[in-house]
Length: 310
Ligand code: FAD
Image 1 (cartoon, rainbow, N blue to C red):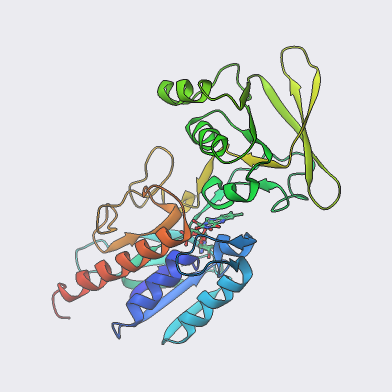
Image 2: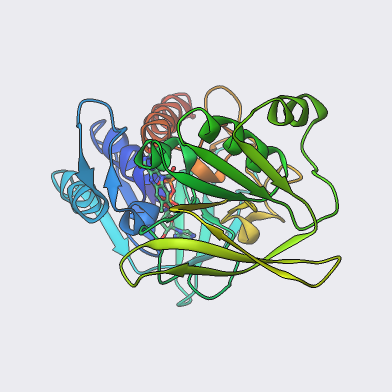
């Protein structure tokens, strides 16, 4: 069995694997797609001490760094079920899609998350060419430009307030007939001069010139009329879905499906830890995922040295 089995090969999983392996303990990483969301990212400008890098470059660097150590990397492996040990000190088991079962004394879950998409024409084609999902990451790219934020929940309204301070103009489009964000956020949003709020708006298309976004079309759901907005950027804020569906019978998840962790990264099951975008830890960012992954691995090591000798 593994001393530490990491599930997920994004920034959190890679950091956990390196920190575990550096303790000289038997470490494995099983990942559906090594690199995670970083593979889908273009420019990265907020990875502290690296002024600019690109997603695929960072993903390759993550994998190469893990390969510096004696880590059993199992890429293209999807975990389907977690079976926690039935007694303290027992082995936990992760069942994989191919039928394999991996056993481990401790586990670090780092399966990340995915942004919910609008699924309208132009969204996929202009992804990273004006269509963005992360205001903390890509907001500064739209300095002085016009953007839309899709979604009037807390994350959409927070994004609109944030972007209003950077960009020339923000159009916030909410599907429902009213915003769903906390009242204090709504009041803040309404106080901003360069923000237009559209409710009962259904985005129907992201338009562009072939190379980049030039506009967006939405339907007024009350009148059925179509409206076009000229802009350079569209931030989609309709939900971040944690990749935790396979864990719901095994460990405690928040109402949003995020893995509940304590300050040491431990889940509701002793010996099972979690890190990164899949957890309740706020602000989904690469540096944060790496810090949390390192922390979870150190906590797993601490758990191991306290286990009764076999
Ligand atoms: P992920 O990167 O999501 O990795 C999850 C890993 O788990 C993957 O290897 C995945 O294949 C694997 N996995 C999932 N389910 C299973 C399963 N059932 N079995 C096995 N493996 C599984 N952050 C920044 O800091 N700066 C940026 O500029 C930036 N730009 C971004 C741009 C885009 C387009 C996107 C989508 C995100 C961006 N982010 C950025 C956010 C950043 O990518 C994430 O916060 C970070 O990747 C989270 O790391 P993670 O390891 O928790 O999860």
